[in-house]
Length: 381
Image (cartoon, rainbow, N blue to C red):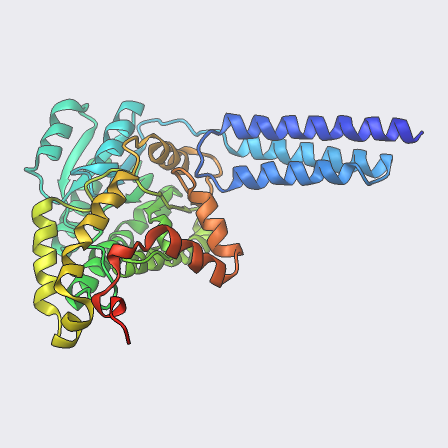
């Protein structure tokens, strides 16, 4: 009898692992939080089957199969039916690629751009279908938001707006939090947080009417503290929390809210070399005599090397991000969080679960190099 139970348990474990693998492979997007959770649930459930009685093993096995089938059913994508989607920050990067991708899929796309005469805006007009509309939309300008809102209503009329993707954002110049001028903190917060909030408030009535989707593009940095990104990560943390609260509040209206937290991808969010030089000059101009003495001018000038090295670790392929955003827009039951990018989920789980001292030690070993030590710390006491 023991042998029968053992064989049955191993059979259940094998089938449960197979079902978990199906979920794992069918939904290839690495950013979907639900996928690893279901996979781990199946694995843990299979392990329990080895120590439970034959009857309870079958009961648990059946329950796991049911939950996995329910999960797979929830991942079914809704038909496009020319649903209208507004995407901000479409001049380049994720927004530009997303606008083109959604247009190919048959969505009616409203592509908000910072400059309607930019090369990215012109490319969208030239290469996309008639279902795309390029909108001048600086998300820090209330008048441009209002004007874009009027144009969207005029075009969609009774069809409504199905989804809003708040994608526009800036990185700023990565350096120590003490050295970042207050004007840069405020600029990052204005673009990365206040802008998306104002756009969301403007278009929420349309989303509530369609029972549609709100998708906010945050960052891994919104939950994982990393040196040099005090301004950027703080704004993304604020956007992540705002999104989570909106998810709770808007559920009563049938609006589903998702947060996309990408890792490092090679967009132009860091700006050009000219922008880096300007930011570098602004930092030097705002330093006090004490800060200049303790950090040193050379230390500030080295920060752009950190930015160059950081960019060398980024991925040029936006596919994981685009796939996750499409899922958030189209899935019957989208995930509340997506984490596209290599090792992003690992970093997030590590930041949440590891002891703080261990996490800080690992970050220091990986990100803090000897050449990036302030001058005063090189000197003997």
